[in-house]
Every structure is written in C-alpha cells, then in structure tokens.
Image 1 (cartoon, helix red, strand yellow):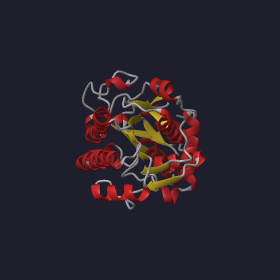
Image 2 (image 1 turned 90 degrees about the vertical axis):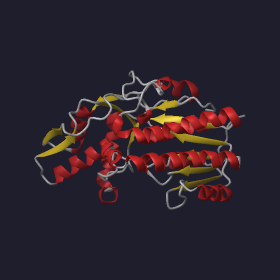
Image 3 (image 1 turned 90 degrees about the horizontal axis):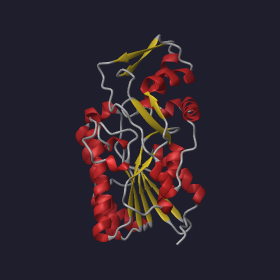
Image 4 (image 1 turned 180 degrees about the vertical axis):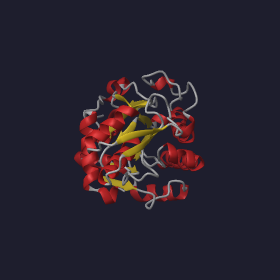
Length: 316
C-alpha cells in the first residue's frame, strides 16, 4: 500500500526541541491529519501511566521518538547515571506501551555514540556490537542501543513494526548553545562569537584537535527520518549521515573564520578527545529509503551561525 500522511495521527516526542523543530517543519509540508509535538512538560516518558494516558487521548498511528537527555562530553561525564536511566526508561516504556495500544509504527532514534570506540571507518551498521562504546558517553550510547534490542525482539515475538535509525552528530538552527548541554558545533560558535564581541585574544578548545567527526544538517536529518517513517519497515539499524568527515581542528578553524574571530585557538589537552574517528557508511539509507543529505557543510554552518546571531539571547 502507498503510504499517505493525510490519515496519520503522529506523536513526536521531543517535538519542541532542536531536531523536533525540523521534524515538525518537515511534517507540516506533508500535512498529516494531526500532529502532537511533546516535551517533558507534556508527558514524562519515564512514567508508564503518563504514556498510557497520552496514547489514549491522542490515538496515534505513528510515534516518532526523538526525546532524549543529551549533552556534550562534559555533561555525559558529570551525569552518566541520569543519561543512562532517563534515556533507557523513556524509550523502553514508550515502545512497550505503543505495542500494547496498537500503534501501527514507532520510529526510534539511536545515536552514533552507540558504536564501539574503535570501529572501522566508515561505521557500518553490522559493526555496532563489535566492542564497547567510547567511555565518556558509553552510558548514553548503551541506553539508546537497548532500543535496537527491543525493536528487534518485539518484531520477532509480536510482529511489531518499529524501526531504529542511527543519526550522526546533528547541527543547525535551533540547536542548544548553552555550555552545559551544547555539542561541539554550537559550543564553538558561541565561544567564537563571544570572544569576538569581547575582543578576547584567544579561545580554548578541548583536546588536541585530532579527532574527526561527521556532521549532518538537522533539516536533512529530519527528511531522512520521515523518509524512513514512510517506507522502511525492518528492524535492522540504519545510519543517517552526510558522509562528510572533518577534524575538530579544521572544524574549529572553519567556525572561527565564518564568525570573524581572528584570535588564537588554544588546545586544552588535559580535556578528553572523545572517540578518535566518527564517519558513517550511509549506503543502507540510500538503498532502503532513498535518503541522501543535500546541504553542504559550509552552507549549513553559515545558516547556523546566522540563526545564532539573530537569536543570541534566546539561544543562550
């Protein structure tokens, strides 16, 4: 049967957050029957009864689970128990209650942090169990990876249709720029903008700049998620990425150039580097549901910086 959004009632957990904003914009273009974007004030997903009440009231056909407790290396190191418990309990209970309530399909988001610390590059989905994640964010990565186990187990035993996507690091407008929760791109944008405005002679960056990362513009990521929601109905995990890899050193220098910061970049090598390399094999997403990213990295950075400058107070 051809997928139609027009008779779909859709819950988007985390729908008022960073990625949720872009997913909601993409959903508006598809015009489903009803969309329910949630944040923690709407429903505490750690509470099974709250989930049951939500499903009774909204009667969704599709649930897209974006909600997560997230942060950079510092936040993961300071709150490993919270990152494990909150992410595990939100996802596991949501899938179980969706199955019990007869929701047609659930889209689950994992994380690139679920991959082993030393994974052959580019990361292939079949390598996800071949080692332990990088230590600084292992509790978060493992909690998310348990949703893959659940997705496959529920399909095997109950025939339940859930899918598991592995997005690479996302960036873009509406990202989180506060230092306590920001990832590397918004953190560096804020540092460079603040330093330029204060005429500071230098900024400090964590580690030595040698690790590499792949980044995906959030608007592209939202399109990938909805393409998978429309046409992908298997429990094998699927990477969602851009296939563009850049070192943290080159990333920092690029952001400094695009923000106009001309001071020194000092590397604090007492801080951890994190995983040495991250780059995904994105061929499965193209084969299974035709997804390819379309935004170049520099264009995405320029748009993100412009949004931050226009929304400085709100973003901070």
